[in-house]
Length: 121
Image (tube, rainbow, N blue to C red):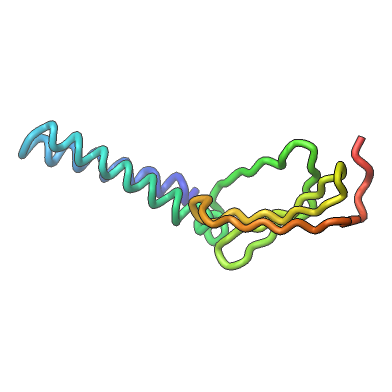
């Protein structure tokens, strides 16, 4: 819900800037201003607010488990999400960090990891 409210606010501000600047100054300047508001809103969401909304306010986020791996668990460390998957082909557990904006993501691999999981068919 919070994600939808955020985007409604960003789009409303962009339309207001487009209409206000376009009507009183120039339409081209209004269009550029509105597009700038949308771009800044998207960058702020992608690099800051997405995981914050999900963790603290019940936002929406989806992550896919890589092919050939089995999901074990997920946990939060500060505002970053850590996912643990198991790869039965080479018997390793992989911890992958999903940080804000997908920058500086960590990855830890544990070799000879034998989790108590059913065999993949």
